[in-house]
Length: 189
Image (cartoon, rainbow, N blue to C red):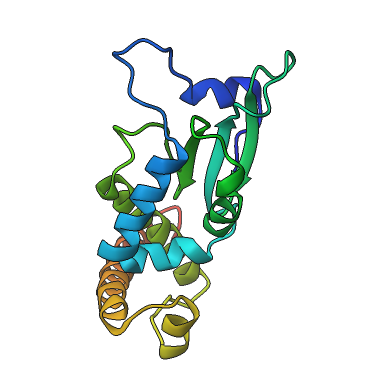
């Protein structure tokens, strides 16, 4: 995942102070949504808890404590989930964040929901599964993999079912593409 670093990209999540704009993500809101994932969608929480910043990041985009004339408070500080919790005590209550996951960006409270994180989780799994299938090494839940990610038995069942469906869909799509290509006269030798 390419993390944005330019002022223009950082400002992509900026909102005016006007009331019609959604509330920015604060550390309290991020902690609340992560708590909902941990206790209601543990299989998703378990994955993002282990991911590095390149795959899942909570990015501090505005810091009330680090305001200078030069930065005007805008910062670019990505954190893994563990890093976010480790640094949470030092964040100002009004610092602003956004979440990067599965190629998507969640910038405010109205779009940062469990449902939207679940959608990004699916996108992340689909991308990883396709990469693995193209290496001829499909991702499957094994006991050691479940242990590595801290999955409970019920988590592992949920993830196994989802991975099986994703892998089947990818293989079906790739087989269709292959069959279509085989039918092209310019491909036949």
